[in-house]
Length: 110
Image (cartoon, rainbow, N blue to C red):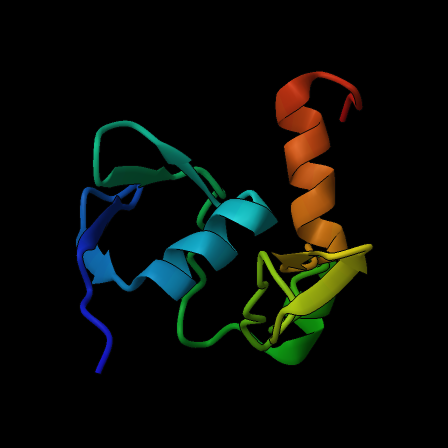
């Protein structure tokens, strides 16, 4: 069982502890921003609707319920590269992780 050791603070001041995988997924999707050592702030605006909101209202507001997608930083497994008598093991980054790392290095702008 994964430990939920990272704190996410939402706009309404509610808090939730999340696991490393959930934190990585939220960071890659741009939903949270780090504010402390193990503390993150949720930066996606929250839209609240009344219980009587119909599908027509949600469509008019272009609100589409979506399934949460777990984004991963690395592909499963590792790859071994051999050059002569040297062996090197690597993990391959996903496209989302590569985009994030390029943005952090300043090589790609949003």
